[in-house]
Image (cartoon, rainbow, N blue to C red; front, side):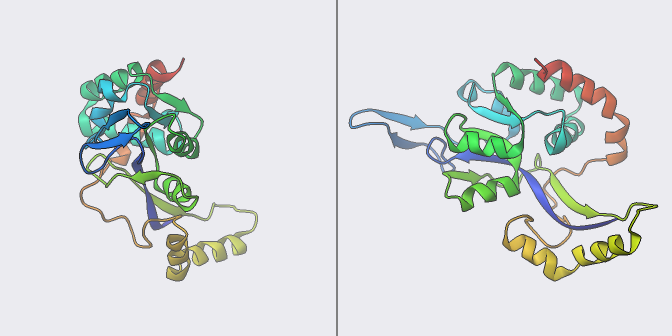
Length: 217
């Protein structure tokens, strides 16, 4: 197995409803104005009343959302993570079928803020959607792209060719150009989550059960 480049888990905001630089004025009509909330600096803030019914995320039992939640459990410890997860669920978020759906829901203004993947945000920005990604923090998760040849693969020669092709720097650079990857190099950001993957796998069943109990309806 080999890694080539990475994406990341990000907070996405609707720039018409959330400010990244402080409080501002949002005109809602000729006479009415509404204060625009400032984007949160931490995922912990998503349980605040101001984001009630305004957060979107994919089902946290699956995919990169699940991996992110599992990694946050390591970062914060089980007790704090459970309290946050329960408070987030109680804050009536939109739980949707995938990360691209999160971006579309935020772009429509149905949610103001969402948890998603960087490539889905960039795809929305290419469509001119009013969205922005918040910066990486210690709560962000980098997602390395990996490729492997399966043992006893039915077409090993072709599999090896693909394995080698995807590791070429020019291929990774093209993926960066279309925003499928954030970087062509290995994930080396120092201020992001650094999960203990063996421990995460050891706790996988317990953490998944807790997520089911909190988020399944």
